[in-house]
Image 1 (cartoon, one colour):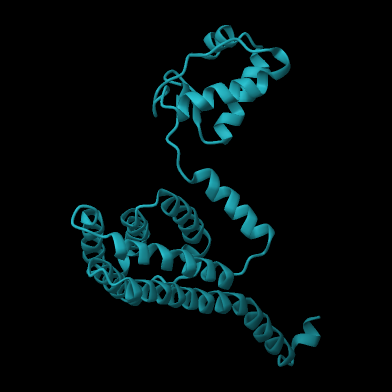
Image 2: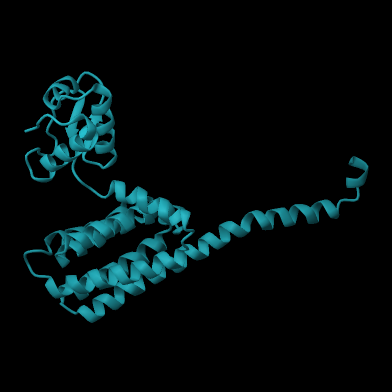
Length: 265
């Protein structure tokens, strides 16, 4: 499967060989690669060169290096984890505002939901229906199920992308939602039963429009769903930012009105 490489290009060649073997299916997800010592012999490279290449492959999300008795180098299932981290750094470094993220989500989720309505049929909507029932069950249990409900909410959005039939839509949507949940939903969306009820009502309407093949309505509802959630988070974020200032202001007023303050100083 692997061949010896020229030392001048050893680093790059190892990465390309392993990457191609994974992408072409010659190495399956979960499969264990030969040990470091075996790979050194197969590739005819130094230990340091091999380890440097493996670190890059790990950073790409192609392999997982496990320690311990059952450790080794294993092929990892490709997912959006690395893309999620990159997007998070980009958003933070560019100081992208919540409103700009919302605008992007409206465009992406509007398109995805429209496409789902155009392509929905009995063969590809089973998981979407199951997830909606799960959301209804969790919503009936109230705010105590907030985290579980929001996870299902995310899965419903991803299921819509699956119904739409374009794997790239699902990949980018998962990347956006991973960041959204980590930095915005968990921090700013009110953890209340009302939030759950409002979200569920919107999801029910969106899914109903998709199942009815009403693309125009599905897109309109998806965009409104994003706008409503964003407005709630922006309101909560503004209140959180104002709280320290209000506290400091009250403290100053209290000190100014204390006739004994000068004597204590």
